[in-house]
Length: 231
Ligand code: CMP
Image (cartoon, rainbow, N blue to C red; front, side, top):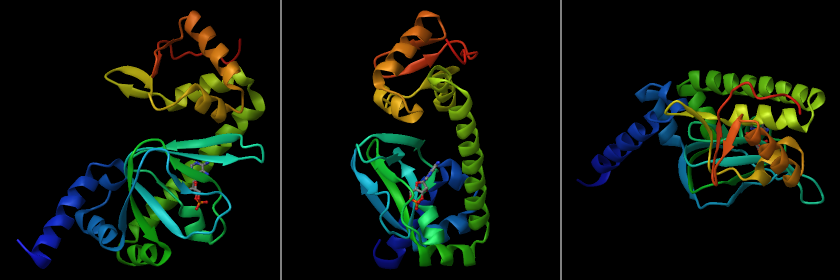
């Protein structure tokens, strides 16, 4: 097979790959083809910088495979992790929409593949498949809700409670077990709750001794979902 026929088959294959990703599952084959036609696929190795806080940019990144962390930093190089995103999530939509500098930095936690849409390409997508704009708005609303919840957690809970609620938020069901994935270090967890790694280490030990969690070398299992909000 050569030329246009081969290209059509390739697009078809990629559309099928996309269909396995949760966000894209909601789109029809036609809508997925629209996204595919105007986007560019980009691959990044682990620990690569994708976006830098404060820089200009107008591209939206959809995660096909891999995982990224979204974080903001201070002058001393400390980072606060806002969110870990995986397949089906997207990032970079804020600068794409309002043309302001990037609100946060994004780096890969593992080898990742993205579909990248520039502002004009996104507008084309929306013209041909308006539901895509609706879906982006839905995710933005979810993120604001989540951010509101986090502000409440930060204001009302001590570090102990913040670690507990972050573990619950990160846990995914793996064959009936609630597991916090292997790619997250104690330093990452500390950066998510705004505490030191030592403090997080002490809290994890305490939760494990009290039988709420078990800490393995690369993951944490939640044994009892009623994690205590304080010591
Ligand atoms: P943008 O500002 O273009 O670049 C950084 C991106 O990080 C931003 O778009 C969002 O996609 C993402 N981001 C910023 N804050 C959050 C958050 N609280 N939760 C999830 N993603 C975020």
